[in-house]
Length: 488
Image 1 (cartoon, one colour):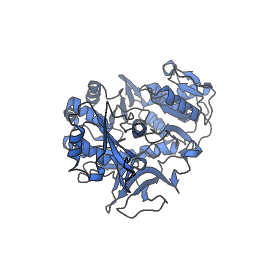
Image 2 (tube, one colour):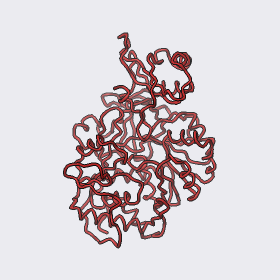
Image 3 (cartoon, rainbow, N blue to C red):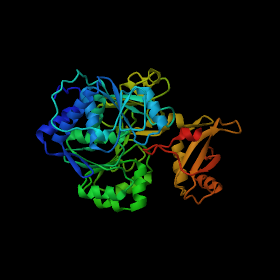
Image 4 (cartoon, rainbow, N blue to C red):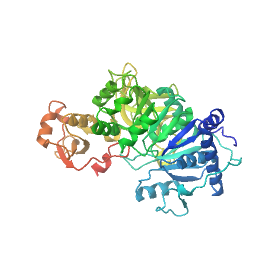
């Protein structure tokens, strides 16, 4: 294999293939792939990409299917300096067109019905990656070269194209492994989508350590999830809060049968209620339950562990490692005193190189601190707290209120799901007032009963003045409320 000094992830895979060639790296549909096989298949995928006349810096779109071929292509592209643009297999045609117009891909893998002018369309399952890889000379690459372009979810604005370097993604994996305490002995069940930062990050973390990753489609079929957990004696898994609600709703406390074998659970991508956190603590007394805060642009910037912070479960914790720094800043980029609110800003080895489009970079940083767009504060003990998305805060007569505060109060009344957004004050006095969208299914309360119930939980000005029943609350694949669509 040619020089791979640009990628710590590729270096790790090669080392594992040399020192523990028969160790299982991936399990997919009962097919077990060793580190030796993984390395060879990555090299074959790299050779194949070379036959397509792809060059360093070219972009390819890859559908994030839970198949070994996805992993081979993903790292094969890294080997050749080709930029991966990973997309959800269920992406709409409009979203695919938006992404393609932005990145101008040379090839598209795994989307047979999508056509983009100038891009070759190739079926992933048609790849013939057999035999021994050639020792093809790869282009000269640097750790700061772009490895992946990922798109933000676009819950408050149009999605942005985030450029992540080889150094960024490897650093993020090291930071995560360091905080959680992952080792080569892990056997992790992955039901998260690989098209998002969380799931793709878990893949990188596992392969960096030389652990074993068991790929399952998703969490929809809990029978498959539980069978994989039991068969492979799983030591960990990752989930979003919505998955936890789903697991407990359909199976009660069954997950607790794995309490003795589970060393870690990673949670992230959306807020989680205090009650859910307390329940996890009770079910898993000896498991590291780690919840991250981060963005596509700055993966896993903060972590908190539930047992460690059982008296501060509303915190997002502290910066993930010594390589990550954080400040609370005002709109001028001045650091705010302890206890005062401002924008959470971070810098570190995992922060993106830049946005692909120049127009998105202008207001992205204060110096070398990335502006997260989230409002929060730091307390006297150094713990950070998130109040809400800056763009989502409701300005009620000068008071900035997080919709999350109102939503949690509404849910405490027995409402299954809801979302709160700002609307113009019809009286023209307060500027904005809260409006609550309530999921109709399963709701036994009238709007008057909700309003009355909130009177003892919220300040009068925080209680929504408008209410509307809807079939379901629109959310992203990782459980984030799509407030922009509700406002529109």
